[in-house]
Length: 396
Image (cartoon, rainbow, N blue to C red; front, side):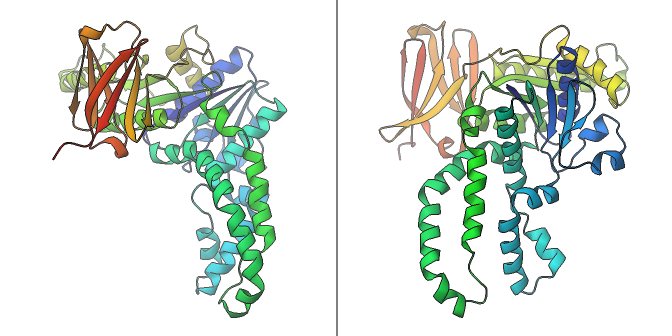
């Protein structure tokens, strides 16, 4: 099974691109699911489906054709299906503080519930071998980062905190419930957590396998949007996911020659050049601004033809990460694959929150995570086509 994750700043057009990808895959005979995990669901709107028709469905994918289905997660339905014990307990605690019933139920929708529900479905469909490809229309960048980090966070909690917390509360619950203003969680609460964790087992390896999961970053040729795309690229790399393409959406077509758009053309050309320099060697795909809104199956088919031509969207095109972050013997380290570099032609320097590596006439920009943003390169070594750069604090 393949997983294609489309991520980007809100409003860049990732839902349309994810939907168009699903249509193209179905045309190629792949059993395809397009799943939206964006709270501001617009996947059904992209296919121009009636809202009432779609949202009255059960918590199951809606068939669009023989090979294509779409699915928008409904968190209220997911709570009843997966999170009942946890949500009920949180709601009861909130009510003891004087919060009304409806407001308490809303506040009991905890951050991460939607993302974890999506991962459960991905794991379920993988085990059932129901689909050949799952196309994920992810939430805007910040929520996408939470989505990819959830399995690691939950795994750490289950190994280090969960057993201690469960045993401790089992011991003190009878006494504490007599004096506490609210009852401590019952063992069924912890059983619910354990059950959910079991449904997520193996999903982290699935997401980090480049032969299974590929990230497609969607951006617009605008500086403010590009900055968020660069940050997303850094954090997907940090979490071990492989970005196999960057899609620049809504480029002004060359045939738009009106003088009113001349500055837009210059601005977009400048940003596009920066994009290609920053993300190299990851391919940059270009999608023009259409003359009309991309809405409905026919327009999505047109978009798919422009984006993919005769290519297979599910083809594995990149398995190597451009760079990885690590820590060895207490020292932060960046590792870059430089297959054609020679020792005498590599240079590097720090620019803002980026490390810039120069190889002959080529330049590679590496955005740094927050934990390394204040560090500077102290030592570099090229060995077996891998450049290792040590990062340390600036000497006082």
